[in-house]
Amino acid sequence: MKTSLGKKQKGAAAIEFALVFLIFFTVLYGVVSYSFPLLLVQSFNNATAEAVRRGMAVDPNASDYEVALKKEVGDVLAKKLEWVPTAVRAGLSMKPKYEDGILSATVTLQTDNLKSIMPVLKLGAIKVPDLPAQLQAVSSVQLANK
Image 1 (cartoon, rainbow, N blue to C red):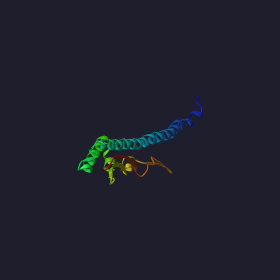
Image 2: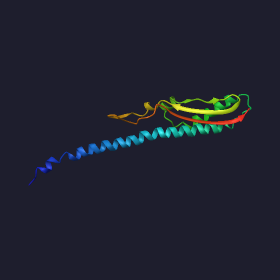
Image 3: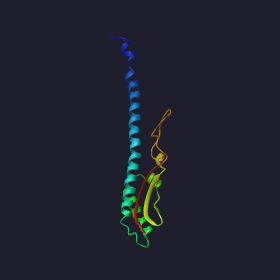
């Protein structure tokens, strides 16, 4: 003998699964989509620090000091950031800065291209990931006095 209680519970598991899956998927997507920009920032920091360190090996008394320093910095950044997706690398801008009178080097890396590689999941008023407009890393060193 069957009761009518079993028929009322038939779709309950599917509804519960749909609700739990939506929450689980949103949390998982948030973890993955926020991890990538954090990895980029750490890589930018590491690359700029290494570029500035390697810039210290360039002879400051050389006649083409700025050219040699730019080449060394560019080579280091290219090697350190070769894993970065092409869409992000296309938006990277390197701004080496040299001060007059004091031989110092500052390397800035920034990108504005994050939105192109990370699809945004909109859940009402909540956006996942809600990324900043740009990511930036700056490293500097004073090499010597002239």
